[in-house]
Each structure stands twice: as structure tokens, then as C-alpha cells.
Image (cartoon, rainbow, N blue to C red; front, side):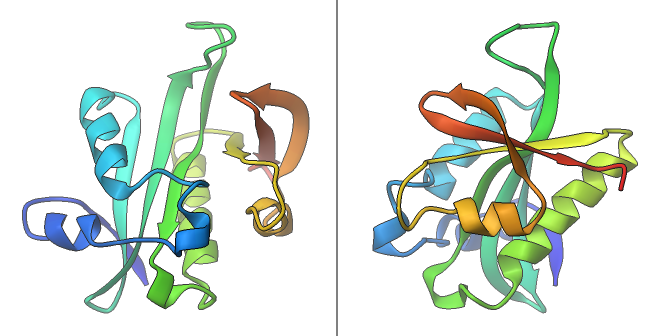
Length: 152
């Protein structure tokens, strides 16, 4: 498994990544993420998740983005989007992607990784809690904000 930078050679494969229908309200489609990555190029780190040459998902991190609560003063890095294709879920690709993002953040000197999720039944809370993210008591646009310590 590896993360690949998205370019002309794999753009269509990235755009073809779609989550299960019951998850469509939990994560934006890849096309929106890539548009946001283009507009916020200074913060966005989008990657295609591949197993061999098989595209299996998409992940996008945010690097030192000004948090909307305290713009310019509270810079946060973490997981912005995670889309595992419906045909490839339950195979460890999501865990791999989150760990790879955390490794990238650690390599950049970050000590914490943030993520947000929709607090609903069937949502991703158990997945992120299993990976060491803990809610910090904040909400961002009605989503739970959680943080993972990267120093351990």
C-alpha cells in the first residue's frame, strides 16, 4: 500500500473513488476535495491510496491550516478527508491512510493530528477512536473535533 500524489496520470482513478451510499452524507466526494485542494494549495495534501496499482481510496490532510475559531493564531494539521472506495472497505486501507498521514505530519514536526466527524450512528467515531483520536470538547460545524498525540 502507498499514497501517491495526484497528477494527470491518476486523476480519473481518484475521481472514481466512491464510498458506500450510506456514507455519502459523511464525507464529500473526491471531486470536491480536489477543488478545495486547488483553492487551498498552501494547506492541502491530497493523495490517492493504492494497493499495487489498484486505486482503493483517497485521503487529504491539512497542514498548518488556520483554525476557524482563531484564524492565524491556532494552526492545526490533520486529516481533512478520507474516502475508501465501497469495494475496498474493511481491508485496512483506511487505517493505513490515517497512519501514513500521521507519519507525514510527524515528519513535518507536528505533535498533534486533528480530525472531525459527524456524530451519528453508523458514523466513523469508532474507527477514529480505535486509532487513538480523542474528542477535545470542541465542535466544528456540528462535527466532533478530536485530536491524536503524535509524540507517542
